[in-house]
Length: 178
Image 1: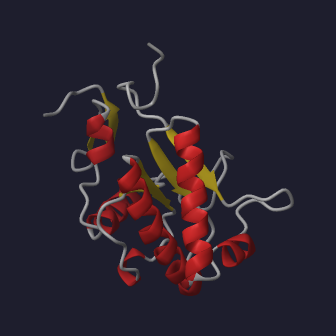
Image 2: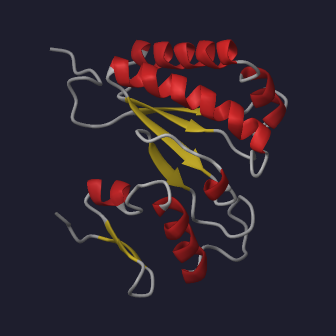
């Protein structure tokens, strides 16, 4: 029997980003892609069709540089709700990647999808030398993600890893949790 995403115990996510041939992390692309409810629904339908075609167990949306553009966030939420309904119907997981600059207290994210906040870099992206996530930064991220009604360590514990922020940032210890 051929192993598929549905029969495998390993989760496989299809990641969708807002890059184009001419621009990485294009918010102009998102403005066009999510311009109306019908366009957002069409995009959701296409994403789910691709995930099913290639046997993924979930979809991960990583649309970056939206920052505090509430106009795009409003359109994104319409898309997210359509996508969540379609992924749920198809038996696929949905993960939404958020940047640390996402104004989560100003956005009413729907319950259901898994939310992951990128919390590895204080000032922008890349791997160049410079300040990375420190205790103060991580503590703020935990508070922000908690406002989404989600356990900040959930994804890590599911993988058998555990984070201790209260003990001074002990990250990725091999402790199993129940």
